[in-house]
Figure 1: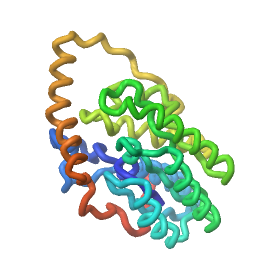
Figure 2: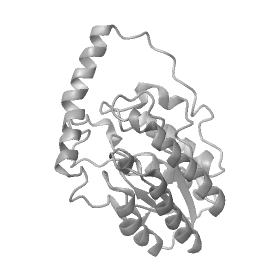
Figure 3: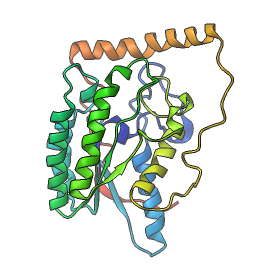
Figure 4: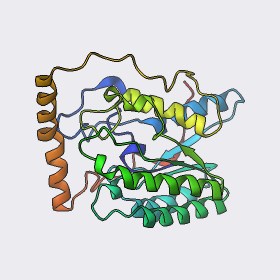
Length: 265
């Protein structure tokens, strides 16, 4: 069972390759997939070899803070008696000026303790390394503190950690959507492979974290034009929502609220 925000919902990974909306990333009416759905498919494939069914639910909703994830999504997930639950959030909290990684760590540890007490295995994730992001690199130090909490919590409670901070391939902008916050389809594919590794399983692609072949540097005018487009289409709408106290996930419901069988590929 997956709980979380846009990362686990799978924003920007639209099956079938439908073009994304210029300003919001994806048409809200289009289904999104993402690494958690891909991971479920990989696990279903491995269960199929033993003729065992595999069921999966995804409760993640874009824009969610960690507290609503823990308060609203986690009890529903645990009520489904899962073998494995992912509890991944806090990134939206750290984008806010008052985001406190120590308080978030305490909240996350309580959630992990509850999940482990129920008998479920838990998958956590580090935050991504934002050193190259013009929008969120100022949160890098706080993300580093949060990551330290994630590793400590995992060690204390026997959880697994998806280490996206350590992924070399994610330092390539071709893994990032035009909003420079969410992953592309290829980025989600690679994170799904990293999740298999985090769970102690063999990846399907042994080159899952190999960096892409470098591209020639963009001319200065092309970089400036790309930055101007990003400011207009993504940074400004994002900042406007923050000032208004609104969320991209307001009024949305989980895309896969009930456990349903995942077909093997």
